[in-house]
Length: 163
Image 1 (tube, rainbow, N blue to C red):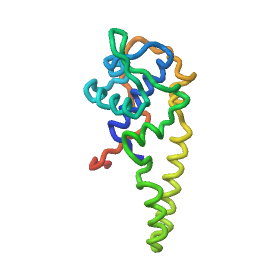
Image 2: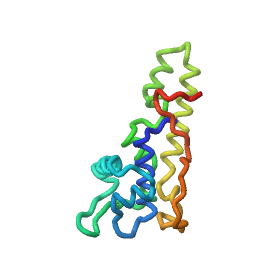
Image 3: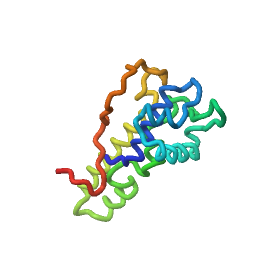
Image 4: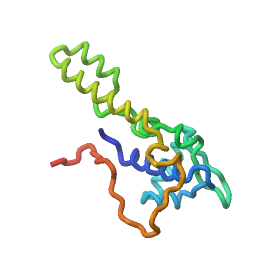
């Protein structure tokens, strides 16, 4: 599955906000530091999430961002679709169904792609932010020292050499 860098950043920012759900708002600077994200790019992502009514911003000295809904109500599929479009690397389901009908020589291949797409979609649609941050978004206890984070999934960029 291909997730853009922007999609990964959006998910990481949502996780940070999910961990702090129910507390005060979180400043962009703190989200960037917590998730090791570039602050300027994060501003654009948060604006997109705000326009989609996933997060809200509060102005003022104690301002920042927070989730509009509980982490248990936000599906990963919602974030990925917003930022990256269709969930699967093989196009949308309707396109694959059309190919199965119109290209009988490759029907079995497109059928496999549709199954992969459906499985990926099912997992992302059944996984919430609360599922990946634990305990319904309560802040997990972490060490004060900063360690280098490694991504949980491999990101494949278009045009990248995978050899």
